[in-house]
Amino acid sequence: MSLVKKHAPDVLLLDVELPDIHGTQVAKEIGSEHPDVKIVLMSAHSEKIFSEEARFEYIPKVEFSVRRLREVSGSLP
Image 1 (spheres, rainbow, N blue to C red):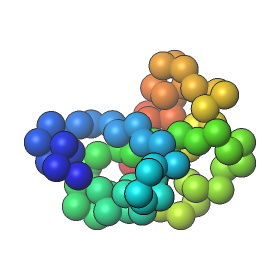
Image 2 (cartoon, rainbow, N blue to C red):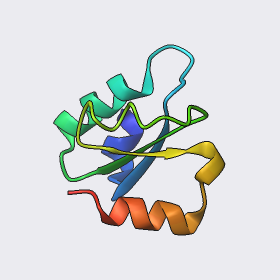
Image 3 (cartoon, rainbow, N blue to C red):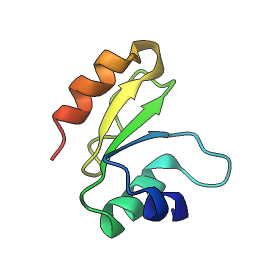
Image 4 (tube, helix red, strand yellow):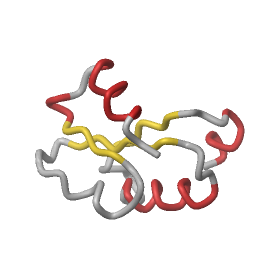
């Protein structure tokens, strides 16, 4: 969270599986404090179950590429 405040990114790529907290929770917290940051979640899970929870997009790791990230992050509010 402090890195987002310090660096003010346009897009944040975040893994769903984090050691101490679920990525969707981090995304929700960052989204509420920094609404201009576009958040893209990544996961080894193939189902799009996370992006419906908040204002972020989702890319399965098997589909990840810079091109795909650009496509998805461009579709975010």
